[in-house]
Length: 455
Image (cartoon, rainbow, N blue to C red; front, side, top):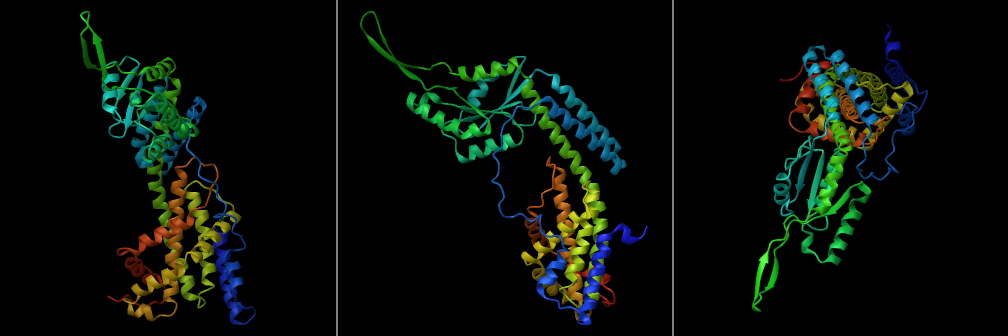
């Protein structure tokens, strides 16, 4: 099939770049900044660039899991296993292991045994509560101080108003899909009025997260008891009151009576963890395919920029190649784009590259390294060619990073916010070590008539 049919953005963009250069040579049109910027964006506009007006981050909420949500996740997991077999047939044995794990998760929905994990900061009474509850374990409840994916419920102990670290831990647990019950321990150390105030504050902090709170005293302080004998003698002693766990045991009894909500929440969380493992393995194969696409594209960008004496117009060629990368890499990662969407994404990447000053930074960094390649350094257009190749590679790696993260998300629509941070981060990483030196050595060898590489 003709390359113009296979890669229309690439061919059209490179052709437009060459046309603009030729027209400028014969003085048919001026090359001012506004024209270059408009051409660089390929007429796309920047409708994916929405840095302004971002909504405030939502607070993670603990929700009641429905069976249909689990069925949907299990179905997607099964499809991912099929996809892994298609894209990496050499992992058939591993795929079958995943399939078995998926079936076991489905079977686990029928269990009635619950595992309760006890967590909290130091001096909140975790060990005391565990010892008490562990001694009363039944066929329905198992208690542990080990917080892992098997825990159906997390008792998060606090000894007073929740600190910032405790709130952060709560949010992390809820975000990970854990069911949490906040337990105010040592309530006996408060007066009735103070206890009510502290309890209300905690409830206020966790209410929007859908989390309940109970108050207990796992190990009440000894109380002084005064006794009067028949002979009129008075004796005083300290006695240890019984643990006050009524509010907690009432909640635990409720869960034992209806374990399904906790079991479904655990199954959903475990299935999502299994999904991530499968996707990470799948992305390993996809990255190999993606790099095989990026490398010839970066050398194509290098050749186009090297042959074109106008540094401004070579940005158009780079943008055209970036648009084709969006289409090709998107197809590898199962993301389908129209040509208009790909052009818009390329415009976004080009605009970000300019806004972040990566063109100048790349030229400076690469120019410094290039000076060691004396023959190549003296060749006209060499720096532009290597810079174009490097920026193309940077765009490709950014898209890989984005698509890999997107594959781990449940988001239905693609959101390209944050590409700027990815570009900047990858650029800073590449400047460290020998990455740039190695890249320049490879690039010089790919440039047409660049001359031999200096030893």
